[in-house]
Length: 204
Ligand SMILES: Nc1nc2c(ncn2[C@@H]2O[C@H](COP(=O)(O)OP(=O)(O)OP(=O)(O)O)[C@@H](O)[C@H]2O)c(=O)[nH]1
Figure 1 (cartoon, helix red, strand yellow):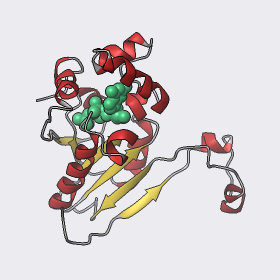
Figure 2 (figure 1 turned 45 degrees about the horizontal axis):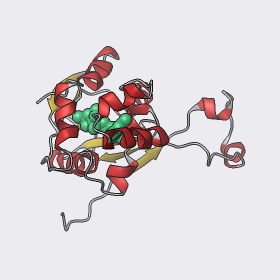
Figure 3 (figure 1 turned 135 degrees about the vertical axis):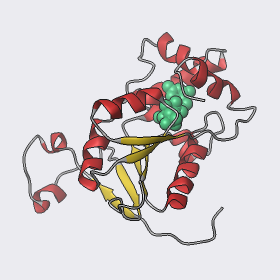
Protein backbone atom coordinates (compact mmCIF):
# COMPACT_ATOMS: atom_id res chain seq x y z
CA UNK A 1 0.00 0.00 0.00
CA UNK A 2 1.38 3.42 -0.98
CA UNK A 3 1.94 6.10 1.67
CA UNK A 4 2.15 8.92 -0.87
CA UNK A 5 -0.86 11.10 -1.67
CA UNK A 6 -1.43 11.37 -5.41
CA UNK A 7 -3.80 13.58 -7.36
CA UNK A 8 -6.08 12.55 -10.21
CA UNK A 9 -8.45 14.48 -12.40
CA UNK A 10 -11.90 12.94 -12.29
CA UNK A 11 -14.43 13.21 -15.11
CA UNK A 12 -17.99 11.99 -15.28
CA UNK A 13 -20.22 12.24 -18.34
CA UNK A 14 -23.86 11.99 -19.22
CA UNK A 15 -25.22 10.12 -22.21
CA UNK A 16 -27.64 12.40 -24.05
CA UNK A 17 -30.08 9.42 -24.24
CA UNK A 18 -30.61 9.94 -20.50
CA UNK A 19 -31.77 13.48 -21.29
CA UNK A 20 -34.21 12.22 -23.91
CA UNK A 21 -31.76 13.11 -26.69
CA UNK A 22 -32.24 16.82 -25.96
CA UNK A 23 -29.58 19.42 -25.46
CA UNK A 24 -30.20 20.83 -22.02
CA UNK A 25 -28.33 23.46 -20.06
CA UNK A 26 -26.91 22.77 -16.60
CA UNK A 27 -29.92 24.35 -14.80
CA UNK A 28 -32.25 21.98 -16.65
CA UNK A 29 -29.99 19.00 -16.06
CA UNK A 30 -29.73 19.48 -12.28
CA UNK A 31 -33.52 19.47 -11.98
CA UNK A 32 -33.74 16.05 -13.61
CA UNK A 33 -33.74 13.00 -11.39
CA UNK A 34 -30.64 11.22 -12.60
CA UNK A 35 -30.23 9.04 -9.55
CA UNK A 36 -31.70 5.99 -11.20
CA UNK A 37 -28.90 6.00 -13.77
CA UNK A 38 -25.52 4.53 -12.99
CA UNK A 39 -22.84 6.85 -14.30
CA UNK A 40 -19.44 5.75 -15.42
CA UNK A 41 -16.45 7.96 -14.78
CA UNK A 42 -12.74 8.16 -15.40
CA UNK A 43 -9.72 8.90 -13.24
CA UNK A 44 -6.93 10.62 -15.15
CA UNK A 45 -3.37 10.71 -13.90
CA UNK A 46 -0.70 13.01 -15.32
CA UNK A 47 -0.74 14.50 -18.81
CA UNK A 48 -2.27 12.12 -21.36
CA UNK A 49 -0.87 14.27 -24.15
CA UNK A 50 2.73 14.30 -22.96
CA UNK A 51 4.78 13.32 -26.03
CA UNK A 52 7.36 11.54 -23.90
CA UNK A 53 5.02 9.10 -22.16
CA UNK A 54 2.56 6.66 -23.71
CA UNK A 55 -0.42 6.72 -21.35
CA UNK A 56 -1.59 3.48 -19.76
CA UNK A 57 -5.34 3.05 -20.25
CA UNK A 58 -7.51 0.67 -18.23
CA UNK A 59 -11.18 0.06 -19.10
CA UNK A 60 -12.30 -1.49 -15.83
CA UNK A 61 -15.64 -3.27 -15.65
CA UNK A 62 -17.52 -2.60 -12.43
CA UNK A 63 -17.54 -5.48 -10.00
CA UNK A 64 -19.40 -4.53 -6.85
CA UNK A 65 -18.50 -7.80 -5.14
CA UNK A 66 -14.79 -7.73 -6.01
CA UNK A 67 -13.97 -4.01 -6.15
CA UNK A 68 -16.08 -2.83 -3.21
CA UNK A 69 -16.64 -5.83 -0.94
CA UNK A 70 -13.23 -7.35 -1.65
CA UNK A 71 -14.62 -10.72 -2.70
CA UNK A 72 -11.89 -13.20 -3.57
CA UNK A 73 -14.15 -15.23 -5.88
CA UNK A 74 -12.84 -13.17 -8.81
CA UNK A 75 -9.67 -11.16 -9.46
CA UNK A 76 -11.44 -7.84 -10.16
CA UNK A 77 -10.58 -5.97 -6.94
CA UNK A 78 -6.90 -6.75 -7.14
CA UNK A 79 -6.88 -5.90 -10.86
CA UNK A 80 -8.42 -2.54 -10.03
CA UNK A 81 -5.65 -1.76 -7.50
CA UNK A 82 -2.88 -3.09 -9.71
CA UNK A 83 -3.98 -1.11 -12.75
CA UNK A 84 -3.89 2.10 -10.71
CA UNK A 85 -0.39 1.17 -9.52
CA UNK A 86 0.70 0.59 -13.13
CA UNK A 87 -0.72 3.96 -14.18
CA UNK A 88 1.07 5.75 -11.35
CA UNK A 89 4.37 4.02 -12.11
CA UNK A 90 4.01 4.94 -15.78
CA UNK A 91 3.50 8.62 -14.94
CA UNK A 92 0.37 9.05 -17.05
CA UNK A 93 -2.82 7.16 -17.72
CA UNK A 94 -6.52 6.78 -17.14
CA UNK A 95 -8.78 4.28 -15.42
CA UNK A 96 -12.33 4.16 -16.76
CA UNK A 97 -14.79 2.71 -14.26
CA UNK A 98 -17.59 1.32 -16.43
CA UNK A 99 -20.80 0.93 -14.48
CA UNK A 100 -22.93 -0.80 -17.11
CA UNK A 101 -20.50 -3.72 -17.23
CA UNK A 102 -21.46 -5.52 -14.02
CA UNK A 103 -21.25 -9.31 -14.45
CA UNK A 104 -19.76 -8.84 -17.94
CA UNK A 105 -22.85 -6.82 -18.81
CA UNK A 106 -25.62 -9.01 -17.34
CA UNK A 107 -26.14 -6.84 -14.25
CA UNK A 108 -25.71 -7.48 -10.55
CA UNK A 109 -28.91 -9.44 -9.96
CA UNK A 110 -28.17 -11.89 -12.76
CA UNK A 111 -24.56 -12.14 -11.60
CA UNK A 112 -25.90 -13.20 -8.19
CA UNK A 113 -27.95 -15.91 -9.92
CA UNK A 114 -24.82 -17.14 -11.68
CA UNK A 115 -23.13 -17.39 -8.27
CA UNK A 116 -25.85 -19.82 -7.17
CA UNK A 117 -25.19 -21.93 -10.25
CA UNK A 118 -21.44 -21.73 -9.64
CA UNK A 119 -22.04 -23.10 -6.16
CA UNK A 120 -23.45 -26.16 -7.91
CA UNK A 121 -20.21 -26.58 -9.88
CA UNK A 122 -20.79 -24.62 -13.11
CA UNK A 123 -18.00 -22.31 -14.19
CA UNK A 124 -18.56 -18.60 -14.77
CA UNK A 125 -19.16 -19.05 -18.51
CA UNK A 126 -21.47 -22.06 -18.17
CA UNK A 127 -23.51 -20.24 -15.52
CA UNK A 128 -24.29 -17.31 -17.85
CA UNK A 129 -25.25 -19.73 -20.63
CA UNK A 130 -27.42 -21.81 -18.31
CA UNK A 131 -29.48 -18.66 -17.64
CA UNK A 132 -29.82 -18.06 -21.37
CA UNK A 133 -27.54 -15.01 -21.18
CA UNK A 134 -24.55 -13.99 -23.29
CA UNK A 135 -21.14 -14.85 -21.91
CA UNK A 136 -20.07 -11.25 -22.41
CA UNK A 137 -22.22 -8.36 -23.61
CA UNK A 138 -19.97 -5.46 -22.70
CA UNK A 139 -19.65 -2.51 -25.09
CA UNK A 140 -16.68 -0.16 -25.09
CA UNK A 141 -17.90 2.55 -27.46
CA UNK A 142 -18.80 5.08 -24.77
CA UNK A 143 -15.40 4.85 -23.07
CA UNK A 144 -13.65 5.00 -26.43
CA UNK A 145 -15.54 8.21 -27.27
CA UNK A 146 -14.59 9.82 -23.99
CA UNK A 147 -10.98 8.72 -24.40
CA UNK A 148 -11.02 10.58 -27.73
CA UNK A 149 -11.85 13.79 -25.85
CA UNK A 150 -8.94 13.22 -23.49
CA UNK A 151 -6.21 12.29 -25.96
CA UNK A 152 -5.56 11.37 -29.57
CA UNK A 153 -2.14 9.95 -28.85
CA UNK A 154 -1.25 6.24 -29.01
CA UNK A 155 -1.99 4.30 -25.85
CA UNK A 156 -0.88 1.22 -23.97
CA UNK A 157 -3.90 -0.85 -22.97
CA UNK A 158 -3.96 -2.67 -19.63
CA UNK A 159 -5.85 -5.94 -20.14
CA UNK A 160 -5.68 -9.67 -20.72
CA UNK A 161 -9.00 -9.73 -22.55
CA UNK A 162 -8.85 -10.37 -26.33
CA UNK A 163 -12.42 -9.07 -26.87
CA UNK A 164 -11.51 -5.75 -25.28
CA UNK A 165 -8.43 -5.51 -27.49
CA UNK A 166 -10.36 -6.26 -30.69
CA UNK A 167 -13.11 -3.74 -29.82
CA UNK A 168 -10.55 -1.01 -29.37
CA UNK A 169 -8.64 -1.95 -32.49
CA UNK A 170 -11.90 -1.91 -34.50
CA UNK A 171 -12.48 1.65 -33.37
CA UNK A 172 -9.14 2.66 -34.90
CA UNK A 173 -7.48 3.39 -31.58
CA UNK A 174 -3.72 3.37 -31.88
CA UNK A 175 -2.63 0.75 -29.34
CA UNK A 176 1.14 0.50 -28.99
CA UNK A 177 1.32 -2.21 -26.38
CA UNK A 178 -0.88 -4.53 -24.38
CA UNK A 179 0.05 -4.43 -20.69
CA UNK A 180 -0.88 -7.74 -19.03
CA UNK A 181 -2.78 -7.65 -15.75
CA UNK A 182 -2.54 -10.93 -13.92
CA UNK A 183 -2.67 -10.88 -10.16
CA UNK A 184 -1.80 -13.61 -7.69
CA UNK A 185 -4.31 -16.42 -7.97
CA UNK A 186 -5.65 -17.84 -4.73
CA UNK A 187 -7.52 -21.02 -3.90
CA UNK A 188 -10.71 -18.93 -4.02
CA UNK A 189 -10.36 -17.55 -7.54
CA UNK A 190 -8.23 -20.25 -9.22
CA UNK A 191 -11.24 -21.76 -11.06
CA UNK A 192 -12.41 -18.30 -12.16
CA UNK A 193 -8.97 -17.40 -13.51
CA UNK A 194 -8.54 -20.80 -15.19
CA UNK A 195 -11.93 -20.34 -16.91
CA UNK A 196 -10.80 -16.94 -18.19
CA UNK A 197 -7.78 -18.56 -19.80
CA UNK A 198 -9.49 -21.69 -21.13
CA UNK A 199 -12.89 -20.37 -22.18
CA UNK A 200 -12.77 -16.64 -22.83
CA UNK A 201 -9.27 -16.68 -24.26
CA UNK A 202 -7.68 -14.25 -21.81
CA UNK A 203 -4.03 -13.94 -22.76
CA UNK A 204 -1.39 -15.49 -20.55
N1 LIG B 1 -21.30 -13.17 -15.08
C1 LIG B 1 -20.33 -13.12 -14.19
N2 LIG B 1 -19.56 -12.02 -14.15
C2 LIG B 1 -18.56 -11.97 -13.25
C3 LIG B 1 -18.31 -13.01 -12.34
N3 LIG B 1 -17.24 -12.65 -11.57
C4 LIG B 1 -16.87 -11.43 -11.98
N4 LIG B 1 -17.64 -11.02 -13.00
C5 LIG B 1 -17.61 -9.76 -13.78
O1 LIG B 1 -16.58 -9.86 -14.71
C6 LIG B 1 -16.20 -8.54 -15.09
C7 LIG B 1 -14.69 -8.52 -15.25
O2 LIG B 1 -14.39 -9.41 -16.25
P1 LIG B 1 -13.08 -10.32 -16.25
O3 LIG B 1 -13.36 -11.48 -17.17
O4 LIG B 1 -12.66 -10.67 -14.84
O5 LIG B 1 -11.96 -9.45 -16.80
P2 LIG B 1 -11.98 -8.69 -18.18
O6 LIG B 1 -12.51 -7.31 -17.95
O7 LIG B 1 -12.70 -9.53 -19.20
O8 LIG B 1 -10.47 -8.71 -18.63
P3 LIG B 1 -9.25 -7.86 -18.09
O9 LIG B 1 -9.23 -6.57 -18.86
O10 LIG B 1 -8.08 -8.70 -18.41
O11 LIG B 1 -9.45 -7.65 -16.62
C8 LIG B 1 -16.76 -7.62 -14.02
O12 LIG B 1 -17.83 -6.89 -14.60
C9 LIG B 1 -17.31 -8.56 -12.96
O13 LIG B 1 -18.50 -8.06 -12.37
C10 LIG B 1 -19.14 -14.17 -12.40
O14 LIG B 1 -18.97 -15.12 -11.67
N5 LIG B 1 -20.14 -14.16 -13.34
